[in-house]
Image (cartoon, rainbow, N blue to C red; front, side, top):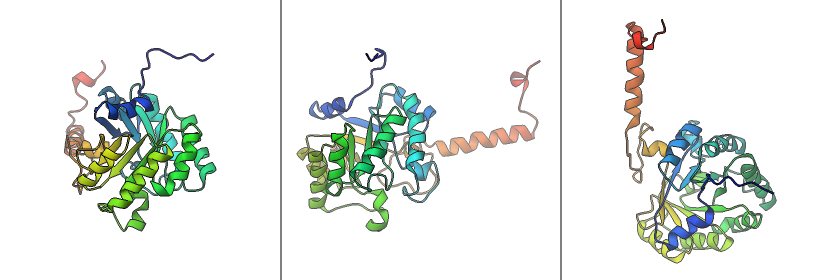
Length: 269
């Protein structure tokens, strides 16, 4: 007989789906480690995504392609250990879900077995419908991802807004029919995203897809202004932490050089 601790009231996949019917907006953010996941979870965000964006913002690669399944699991395990409230979703990295349904189930199964996460996300709509169906049939909840698909950046010719209304609608519909519990819409014109959101029974989570999606997701490093350089149009920086970090480190450096740190308060007698 399994023991279910009463204190851990974690959001479930059906609860996320029900939020759409109830007209409640869904909030989602990325996390890649224990300390940040804990802070995000404490703020009451509904979905925490262990994103393959880690390849860029944590590992420093130019695209999301290099990050491995083992690396995703390593970080998802840290995030899962921190979270008590949010639904934790893990990106399936390229090409872990493109090697046939059996391999996709094996890889997604590893994610669920080796972390405390509850669902996976994979890029694709109509072209990945079979894989989504196979994963859901195996008991693995799937979040789909249509529009701009960063793992297909080479085929798409860069990071650009996706405007093919028929294709986007077909992809989102196919993902829903295959059993996806939600669909991320990335870099899609607002009117198309609104149409898709109205036509699906499952929630849409937008990033650069207008205000009419059922929810919104941002990369945490973007939200906090921790990244330096180009800020994409769809990002809002709710803080500018990069200068604050540099300033704190600079003050530490100066105090050590001047013999001011450690001071009396930081010294044991």
